[in-house]
Length: 236
Length: 255
Image (cartoon, rainbow over all chains, first blue to last red):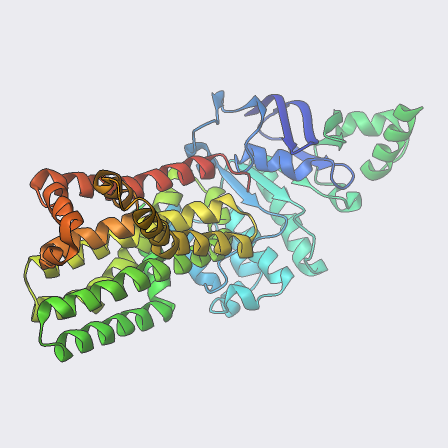
């Protein structure tokens, strides 16, 4: 569904992405993990063409995304830190995106209801707490039932209850056969969500493996431990 | 594109500054036009106010608006919208709202007091100067990531075009007074949108007789129909070129 070939990106002198090659398929729920500043967010922003690569091509459904924007109709994106026009209320932001997207089908308002945003809908974006802003971002990402979901640190800033709601939602969407890409530092949270894991370090992909495979290679029952185990054994 | 433009216009109107701008322009023009008996003199006062205030307002307001809009732009880029559409919608939104303010503030009194060639040329020039300085503001906002720096550059450009440039022209005029400098003078004036706008209006107010030999040359060159077309073409260039550069910059920007 998404194919990345030879992707390179540097900001000034620092090389953030060094020759990334990936193939992501429908039905996968991929955890993109790695230490801080390893290029996770840059990779995600490249897929959304918010960051433009120096070299390499990204294909969405076999078509290069360069100079195209229609493919974003099929993507729901939840940014790490959602930045919204400060003077708009929550409902205005949602309505504006709805009118811009010209979406024909039924919008998915499950998260809107579950997060209780209805009660807060007239609040201005600048008055919202970080967690509520994240709830708005999550609602927007799932609103148009997109084929691909890209979630950058989805649970950062969310309270445990909201985190759980979002988790349930991700599991439901996974069962519909969507491609889901999640970044997170918190491995424990992702344990029973993922089908695959991408581990990045210093702008390179260290490994891209199926979770079953990872678990089989170590005798730990949890993905988080298996990844740690794998990294250590690879270093040796 | 229309939806985003509409959205920006409503956002700007909600921001009360544009209403204050309209009221101030209206106060200026109603008082100047009703207090002065000599229409030509009134037009000259009005022209000087317009050529100072309108570019300043356009350049500062638009630069700040573009910086404040950065979150909105980031949100739009993650949606299925062309970057070109996002950028041009901002330009259209700013131009339309500031032009409406100008028409309400200056246009109405002019239509009431002086609906002649001079009056309409002032209106037309205002409607060129506004988008020119919006385009310059958008270019400044994309060239500098830092807000204070961007606004600083924008004000410097305004200062240069409205004051310093004239100073340079005057200085050269005195230095080379013994030489036939009319042609270079015409070219220099034509390259500054504010000067060009001033000349276009002065020729219609018919005070160019006061400007002596240089005035006659100006009249000869800019007064003809071809002169008008060339001047309007130059003013259009002042909109298109900064806009085009800023659009290229924006298309290649990492957000």
